[in-house]
Image (tube, rainbow, N blue to C red; front, side, top):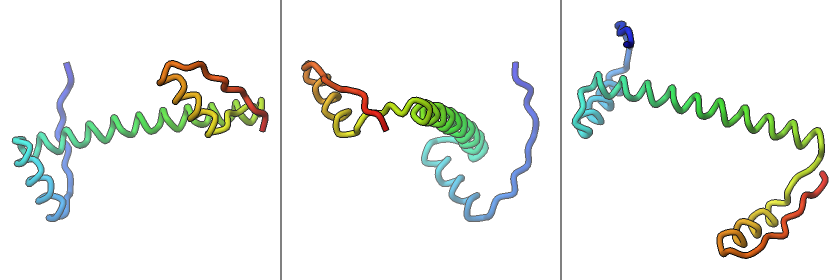
Amino acid sequence: MSIISTTSLKLTEEIKLQAANAAKELGMTPHAFMVEAIKQASINAEIRRNFIQQANIAREGVMKNGKVYESDKVFEAMKARITGKKSTLKVSNC
């Protein structure tokens, strides 16, 4: 069970009005809208963090071994795969 605590937010009147209007359109209270917005922002931040972490790992791998795929060849391979044809994608060295 989660412990619920109170947090105070200082919002400009413009943001407060935007949140209230958006909440109304969604059939939510402004409070529920803000809670959901904070939750979604937290999820998005975690997704972004993971994406950047994986991109850095991939970059390190390329820098270490110099093996890459040319983008036009990747697109050709993807098209071949979609249409059920064999791909001849080969690794290039940087």
